[in-house]
Length: 131
Image 1 (cartoon, rainbow, N blue to C red):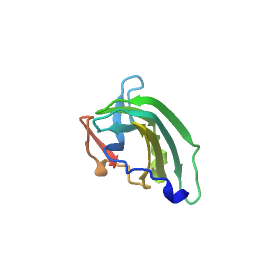
Image 2: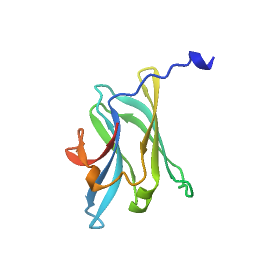
Image 3: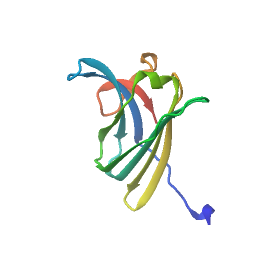
Image 4: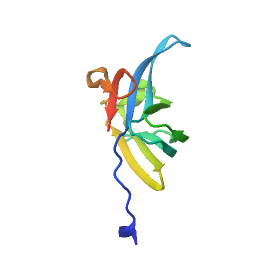
């Protein structure tokens, strides 16, 4: 039965971590975003995030979006810099039409830094991107 379940490959949906200026606190903050670069809306988007290493594990964070419109992005969470020394995992599940999609995005430890910046689709900024 398990072999009969087919989960299609996720394309055009990314996770990015961007360093942005926070007007309220006058600080530069690191924030995670989900990017929908597809030409269709994503429905019932569930994101489960956690950080881990051999010795440490963070709390699990969950976020739900009813709809992520086509060619758009949404903020997932603020990420403190002390978590950059951990592997940061983002598990994504969503519906596109009547099909369920699932993918895990992994930012390996110490991979979130200015040297890894690249242009982020749709956001007109630079950051660290996992496709």
